[in-house]
Image (cartoon, rainbow, N blue to C red; front, side, top):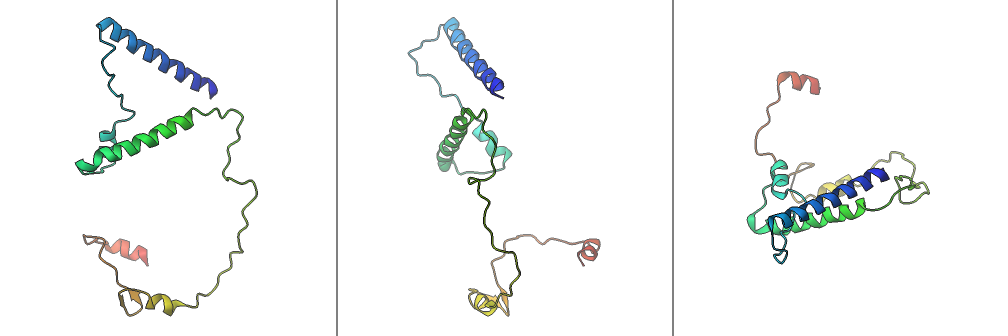
Length: 143
């Protein structure tokens, strides 16, 4: 894995050198500010994820995502050779209580706390805008 990381770094250095050489060949002026290279295709990601962000918020979100990508780039540079993968921060196993069922005694208190209710059920705003049709076969399988 360490060799692959070195190969990628070497390739990136060669690519950067090639870019500089091409600029010199084209006679580009080094005094011009270099264009910022995008770390990722932000608009492409929004399109793939089907996310619509208002224009006035896009730059703010782009900066936040760039920070995250840069952070992961920093993490990728860490030398983890010889580091064993772990699932827990602490080696000591977690102390959990016994999983024994207990009857909940305060059901009335919970129901009384509902802002709106019909009998013993909570009334909530509608979240699904279209009616979902269930076929007779699905209805039979449900039972």
